[in-house]
Image (tube, rainbow, N blue to C red):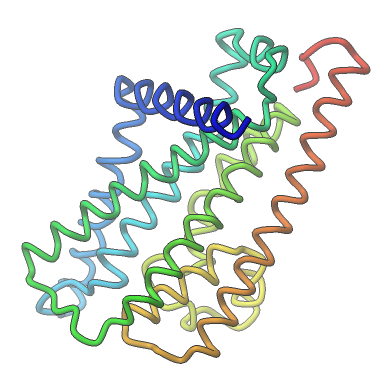
Length: 263
């Protein structure tokens, strides 16, 4: 059973990558857009009088911004594309549940964004010669894994939100910049007013990203990092629970109405 499940995940990820590779829009989301955000961060850093762009908030922050934008639009537009092309009915009627397909797609999209971030990070190190002396590598590594998990949970939630209601598409389209603003993708979260920091506390990405940024800056305070990791995991699991509830709502609606027009 586990071998069959792994085979399904591998085949679905290969198909998703092939579709993204042949789609100029997807290439723009995961390759061009992160580069644009990083370039903008570098220009702003130079305009502020810095001799070289800040590694954490210009380079890494711009890459995270690109990852988030790509995740929002790819994971949600996959469902819209299935509906438009008449594939949604086939997916729901197949032995593999819609929830499983969405989870694998979102995982592929998250990993695609990670590739873009890694490429930007390595390229910046080669060009600017940043020193990694003092970086808390183990803290940054754990934080990055939790950041990817938080993004996956958010992506799965948004994909199911789209599946639950057509109208929600308009709402999701406006999430790109507010989430980036609240989570401090390209600046320290502490510069935000207190009430905005409280509001951003409901987003798991904020906690994982803050722990990663602090680790890159050399923070080795285990209490600080562990607290942020625990909060990121807890809120991510809450999003997964809500996602499960949305999945049940979708399939109950299908069984009651016998049609897919409700989603």
